[in-house]
Image 1 (cartoon, one colour):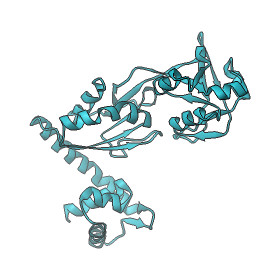
Image 2: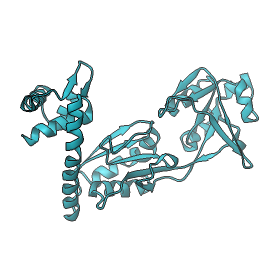
Image 3: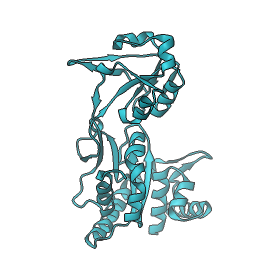
Image 4: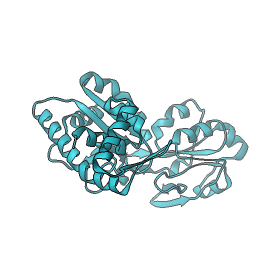
Length: 296
């Protein structure tokens, strides 16, 4: 059986797309389809169910992938270890990260990392839900500290972040300023939908050791904090920003006003986490070092 056929099959499964897999492998979509058909013919069974919009494994395909995926990972680790021993930093580094980390941590350092390690390709997926980085074949992920799996190696990237409720001066002039978290139930609030389970986030506050949660309602629900801030700027209601630094400039310009400042809480900062390995790939080690450096 051709190694290239198995590699092509694994690429399609991992990317759930013939087009993305073909691009990754440097093949045309038709050549990749022919390779998969050859593998299925050789095995005498269908491995993938295809539609115009999706690709999914059959039961046999899932079983085959489950057996070969660890072997490919072992080979990748072996190559990375050999490269690390030779002092070479190259290859593809796959990362899964929160949007907040993408813009505030990774983005400002991309140029520096590329200049220092031009032979490393970064493959970054941005999503706000919890993700199994092992199942997703990622080398590392970035999440807030309270959401890390216990069997992962974690590296703190940022200090704890202060959360802040904000509204436009126009909104507060029309609707008044809330004095306590319970007052929010009489206000229009821009809510946040948790991508992990689809539920609406209950706004958290704390004052003098007293912690409280409030279910809010309003004209917009989103899973993207920047959209919530944009809505607040336009006077739609009060938004809850998950990082004070993201709205500092808007507060300084008086385009937004902080409310319930004496009730604000701090949440765990951002951590990069990766599976425990005896040898950390050189590219990942270099990436971690770069992310820990002060942004230019």
